[in-house]
Image 1 (cartoon, helix red, strand yellow):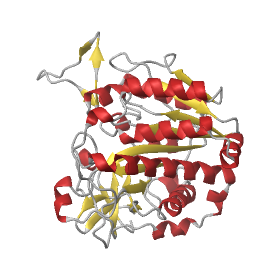
Image 2 (image 1 turned 60 degrees about the vertical axis):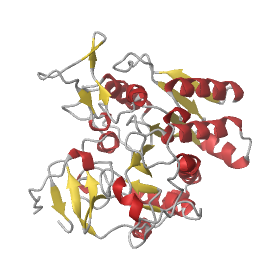
Image 3 (image 1 turned 120 degrees about the horizontal axis):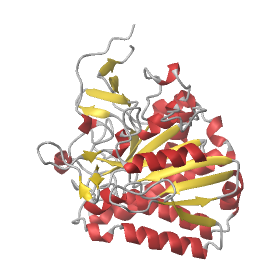
Image 4 (image 1 turned 180 degrees about the vertical axis):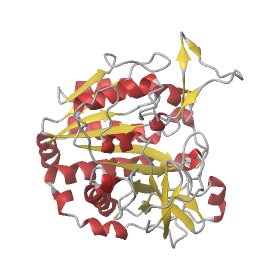
Length: 378
């Protein structure tokens, strides 16, 4: 019998830091330097993204198709969502970035990847494009990106919606794919598009706070995770994606650990000797794995395995450092490219899923679920 501990952690822990950025000063960074004041204006804006996508489409000579999702909806503030499609293969891979508006380096990584697929004539790229069709969303939350906020703000007739105290209503888009969710227009638009695409795999790009790799003083440059924990309380009873999600993470870990500026670990929340794998049903990629059928828009209950990347720092709280931008962007690019190569070649299926234990992680105290903590060994 599973026994949930009554402790319920705050939502701020989910998909966020394990250790506060204040701890950075006492730790020797093992990855890219966080020195240098972050200049937000140097990062990809909404307008920059549109221009970059159009340039990529033009120079790709038809290989990369760029389009809006206006037929599915627009943002709360009326902005168009942009997506790109590249490849002609039977296996469909969904890539999304910047669902949180202050997690900006992820957008550049997706644009760099699309540029490579549109312009490279290498044999490895040709093989991937013959085997895969890639659906990329470089900026899921354009309103939040412009406001430099994690969340987005709900609007009605051109004005922010407000609660009884007059405070604007906001929504974390990464908690809005749920039976009682879809409060934001963004969520419904992308859900409809996902249900139409029916991808076979997905990867979601995020940022997190400052943390260190277990047993070292190295600053974690990226964490690899899955929102429904392998061996956790949910997936074995619904969809058995335990092996494939672990294989995906191990394949990316093997590809990235060779680079001296990367320090990769498994994604966990908590601090001290209390570290938890997340096992939440409210996240977007959780809903993908669970085959959510909202308003009968996914009547076949299509589902797909999904993992996420968590790069250190964000533009709202800091912790990036101007000097680290290129390195942190590159690790996302290389991780995405490796994942796609592994799916395309079938090599991911050859990975021993138990090697997931090779990815550094703190001793597991339990699983953080939507309703509280489930102890390890439940």
